[in-house]
Length: 627
Image (cartoon, rainbow, N blue to C red):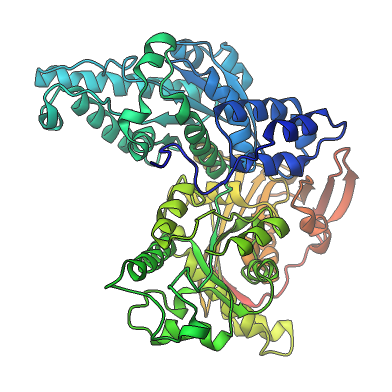
């Protein structure tokens, strides 16, 4: 029987884990790569805690390793020390450098409703609110319908008050948890139908909790779903609850920590963007070059064929929610494309694939080319391949690429890929729905560039329309998403929650811009965000970021012309810009210089400050329509 708590998408923890960790801990200079590689394996609860101690002890050394820092507050109605001890290593697996501020046991109200509490004073980036059914009054049946309804309402009101307190006193969004259903039932199958049973109370609470969080800027860790995936009888451990108030079995801790780490990564904008698919024995059974289009296994009528069809269906579903699809196969190009055009059972078609690479080049090199074509980092890729040798080569050459250990049975591919959580998200909107098509269009733009003799002709051929507007409610989620995801073209790398964006939009002392770009290939959606602080004489740029997929299209010149006109009309005489260096934004080090700003200061942190004289600034002629 397989382990219900396993993390099958990860390689097993090495047999010499303790020796490796000891060597990392003892070294004078931290080997960040070795530590990151170690936490990318399926560590058990004890190993997670041991690795987390090293992460916490060497957090200063890891600060320069290109990780996303995050301070998490934990407020729990049960024992949460084991969770706090395991999280730093689990978060590191998801490229998050985590520090934890743990509130005292059972002190949720004191920690969140008192602005002088140590948690509020710590100013965490997010707060995990881990409450259990007993603390919420939902652990015993309330068989009077009116009392049952009132019980759920009281629980939700309590959670709402704590969430509001976290916002007001700590300035942080809250991660709330759904509740897992107990194994025991009072009426058997009738429990789910009868108002007031514990199963009904928890189901009603979960449903209404999810509804209350939608659009609020707070997040959800769906513990109810997590417990259901492993089985409620496995998840709950009554002895541990009664003895130590541990909320779940010890064996569940690595899975819980991994899912929370993935959620924190998504909150910080670190979800993967592109699923790269192998072909032979991944999208179909067999080898197209040897077996031919009639010899591959695909479709109804055989277990193997249906399993490969399920992989394609899941890939299409991911594409519909905004994940970009690419192909990376060792094959002749003409043979590799045959099933896409000539097999009646094939669900994926060439138009679904943003970049199609079938050749005899090693796969790590092809993955680099796919990322470059899409203008994303290789750390945004997930590579699905049935071949363990190919997986090993990619892990060796590109450790930042996510490579799920799917095994050899195609029936397992969808479950393992889906459970891994590479595409975890905290919001979903129209921009996300159209993202895959946007990246496909971007690949077409790159191809179009080869058909013109110079850049000016290329820009003119695109028929670009640039739309600039202030922040609004409709764009808030996408603005926050861009602020948390954009790393390379980001002058200050300041991060904002949706609540932060709402406050900025309402601030009369801020000038805001959300920028969209469309062309003859399609709508790129919102691609740039700017925030300027208005002053009487000068406007200071607090945030300027842009999606890398529109680099070189002169959008930055268009938005500068817009803000310069607004500032000049308000009586300002100059614009001030600052560049704050990060591990990934070196590409915009000279951004202000290229736009005509003059450097006014070098900062101690390696950054720079710049000024633009609005009296002498002349807006350029641009190859686009501005709206």
